[in-house]
Length: 386
Picture 1 (tube, rainbow, N blue to C red):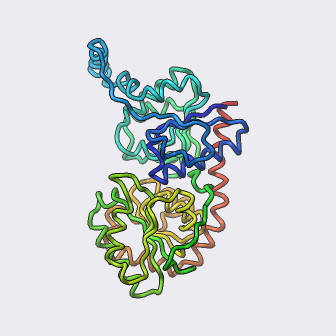
Picture 2: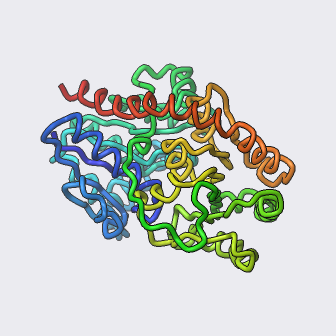
């Protein structure tokens, strides 16, 4: 079976790397002789992933349409309200590969959370036009994200795999019968344990992750996090490890975290992890933390999957849904407005302290089940290609 993963922007977002890395392994473990290709906008960042067999440079290209093509683009936009022709030309590298593939996996987990996605709609139409199987892999979509156009696109998929139950419920409520409930593949990703850095306190290091995206949506969260760190330093003996997880230019967690580090480095109890590690290496550090407090979903998945009690600085349905599936409730997930409330951050941290043993035991019990649900993705995939 030949698989093409597409809608991937590169692996400097270690969450995207985690999805590709773990999905490739899950598919190859479940469907022998699978050949996996990755259509990536920055394939040079993906070569660290060993289970991908071929990398396609799928960077959107500039087009210089002829007069006839311009007319075609104009008429399509005017008459149908779409720009499928133009988007097909822009994403020609991905579209041209479809003919060689058995099944196409749209893998951007939350691509459908950010308004209309004309480029994805165009690729999806090309996949179906060529008679190939189309799968939306490990997705999250909120009710607030839905539109008539998006719903029509979702109907064309042979299979939609929702990575948490809140998304599953939203999609089922919209009449979609091609949806199955699974779990994020990254719950199964291996970890790589590098030597611990200077200043790390064994069994008592707390990871903290912030993202520029989170601070863009709530700038006051920075000062609130600083106050939380002051509280932790005053009332505990813990060390804090500032942990980046996306290291992409213009969206680099380490730039935000370095500002915090500079404020606290003199305490000798705050360390900053490097910004050049792979997803498995970050997971190796997170696995050895006592607690984790983070904004990036796949950093929190790295913590959950290693039974680390976690508070999520959540900004979308995926964080809420994953917590609900683990704990039966949206436990220790703060909304975007709440993360600037110092009292709520401190309350959440104290809940981690109070319920540490209980949370660890819940995760130890639940994670094997979640990992089996991750593997169900490939079993459902196998069914549609049989």
